[in-house]
Length: 294
Length: 264
Ligand SMILES: Nc1ncnc2c1ncn2[C@@H]1O[C@H](COP(=O)(O)OP(=O)(O)OP(=O)(O)O)[C@@H](O)[C@H]1O
Ligand SMILES: [Mg+2]
Image (cartoon, rainbow over the protein chains, first blue to last red):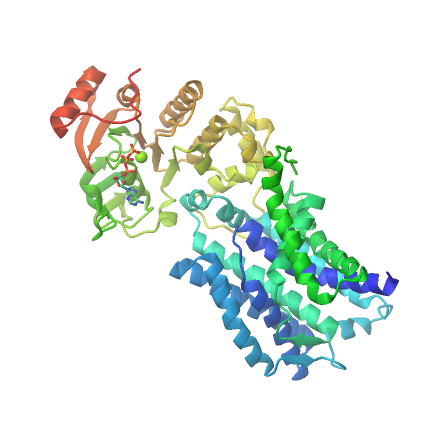
């Protein structure tokens, strides 16, 4: 692989890692398989691209992407908690609705950001940033967001959120409104996903209506890869693990592509990774292999 | 302290599975009183505690705790007043979280959860001191995940979580039934110690008739969603298990029937 490919893969991996952190918050922390992600990733990209091409400040556009993603998460959460729709269906409903909304936001199926001002072009124009600006900005974002999510999960509120995913009955009897916890968790998760979507769009210089398809599976695969390779003994470790998982996943995909697989086969490869990860515990117990205590 | 009036709970109302779990129950509990509850399977004992704690809305009647009408408050808003320990040792703690994290969540029972680091050093000292009372060596394992503890250890931890921030009302639902006899004895002893020490107002469901008579200071019997017997003082002190079974048969017109009654 050329160093350019390695650099590009790492940059992308870091941006996707933010999305993976969002998926981790629902999938692991809340124990909630949230399919909203496919729609909110595109929503973030669409929002940022539309605002930027309309002349708005790209930093502002990125912030708005986060907020709109959070709103999408809230919507899923309200469907589930207030109207008792199953987690899976709540996510699918929001995702489906978002497809139309994203098209409305963009006005067409894709928007080019060529020669537009983006957060990356801004950053690259700083001194010493021409070459590695994208990498450094993405890395900064990952470190800052990862650190704050970790801190958040260690607060009183964060503990209540984790307990909601672990033992809802228990934490409710300790006085926590678990509906509110789920809505907040989904909002934060989808906010991060949309934020990542806006980064990816500004990096690849276009937004496309279908760029979020399969994002949830990519997120799950990355979470699982990270957990297996890095471990989850403490919350700090788990957060680090899923961030690494996001980058490593991109690395695996890049290698697979170099090996000659076409891009359209990637979703199959990703699905296989998730299937393998999900059935491994069952296979282990079937052949009575000890389960590693990570 | 606790005042329940004409409480009715009907499950699956209007369907073929309609079931009256609480049939016009009225009950008064004084501050500091420890009441044991017995009754056949399906008598409505758990439903009674669940209705008090607010697990589900009731069909009619009122629940008043410390002069506050809580009938329409959701479960999480009643947590200010109530602590619970369930039968299943798994249900009182969060398995993927550490001992100290579980403890600190219990310490904030009924309070607003803030965006503030949950565990401070002075909490840890307090936790160690409280855990030491259990005599299980858990004070050395604050950062161990609860999933690694045995059922008995988890239940003892749950009991501590339910009592170290004194609740106005402690609800125990067969909290020793799933434990081996030795551990059950130990957890019951802890229960007696802590309720006595802090004068906790307590409702305890049990299938052990001996326990029902010898623990606490008042015993009620439930049958088909009603309280059919309520004894205390001399009458209770002098009663034997056989007397208790007789009283039950006279009051209900049937035999006392449960899969778990222990006579020892
Ligand atoms: N969530 C529910 N939905 C429908 N029916 C219920 C529900 N909970 C309890 N019941 C029914 O209400 C009745 C009383 O149940 P409850 O659990 O209160 O009995 P119990 O006295 O605690 O019995 P046990 O000694 O077996 O624990 C039973 O007939 C039960 O089937
Ligand atoms: Mg019961």
